[in-house]
Length: 95
Ligand code: FES
Image (cartoon, rainbow, N blue to C red; front, side, top):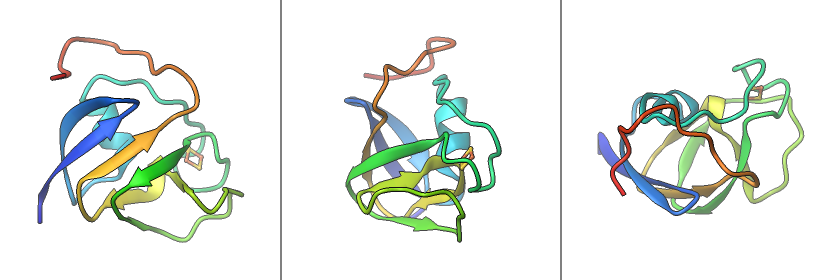
């Protein structure tokens, strides 16, 4: 499956199963927090409420229900939640 739906903080956007969630969210106009973009810092962590992701090996500490958006690629439709309100940089989001 290459096309997936990404629900982020209750807003659904179109995504794919090829790119990391962090990249896809940025392309959709969101501005999630990040620092390293390679699984070291944990700044991009979010809760995986439903769905499945492929997550590359990561050093950052996360809870069992959390994923790192910078190194997780969706394997199915996913529902994720950041514990802060996401900033939007433009209007590419379809609600
Ligand atoms: S941005 Fe550092 S772990 Fe994702």
